[in-house]
Image (cartoon, rainbow over all chains, first blue to last red; front, side, top):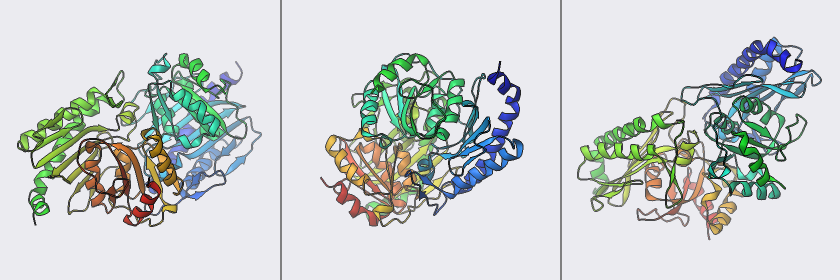
Length: 269
Length: 269
């Protein structure tokens, strides 16, 4: 009883609202995909932001505030409202802006719900391909899309057989890089590019391990529910639970929980 | 007159044949995308190959041999037939097998035609999204697909404003890596992942520079015609024309020819 029971009472309405919000983000983003002359500003953390990011976040905030006016809102672009609410939506309108800016499909709109400090709902939406992942506490992750794939992480108990993925080797500090290379040297294959989309592929049993640095709350909160609901695990690089506190954190995601200890060992400082 | 005039005489029939061949590859590949239990063998060059690669190359060879029985065939998986023919098809059934194996869309089927030693026709086909690029000597590149994008490289005369892309930092030797990092340090942004698909995005004006090592004839021949027909340039890292000889080569592609000298300078040994 308590938190999860309460979430379950509202879960269908919350999921419907989250879907309506990412539908609005889709409509805001699609006109800008591969558009001529779309340019990006560079933010203080060196990440790019476009007019599409800002339009999508505004559209999502409008849907969420209309349906749940008492809930808090934490967004990558427009900051926090009602930050002391017990339930807070967490918004990343375009996770993977570099992919978006180069016309790739490896980006997505992320929306999570925190119940106190625990993520209880997460949506990954790919606005161009129409693929969508929905993870909700206590329920199996749902995936819908026109190009195949079935929700559920795959078994892969041996790191030597694992597919590793990482958005960019440029995301690591030198010492993180050494630890990541130790992990990369222990797996079957590595591939690059992905942002949130790679976590979606892990939840489809296509990738086994993702280790990244540099993630903010709005980058990982939605992924957490999608991955847990698909049977995987997501922690920091020491194996501790991710905390919804300000600042960036390194994250490790594994599709098969049996991989967790071996991956953490390679990532140990 | 001569080579190009002769190619132009047959161009429509050759393009139709190339499209029929990649249609056959699509049909062979699609059932395996995100399929459960698809595994890969590792070849002598450490690259993965799947049953989908082999099925797609067989399907393409059958179409090409039926329509142009005198032409040579050079394929990544099944080797060379009639290697002394003056016209030779060059086949890479799945370029970007790592992307294919992880359920990403950043892979493609490549088909080129060499007239003597010059690539005169190139097709990049994405079998899952249904996107297709067709480059033919003396004609503007054609792009078709359901998700937007227009064929044609964009202007970007300043390296400091350029989007750089690279499939994986693991593709470089240590000395190539130093040269690549020098280029990466001069551009606006870098992104990873892509294989042939990134060259397609360069031909849509979404990416400005790609510098990669490790490309075989079947990796670059189709890209050459697509990029030249979109207004870009493709050379080796010394600025020399790519040669259809055995072995691997580093390649540089730029969307705006005005970027070529500056990029070559950064890549100089």
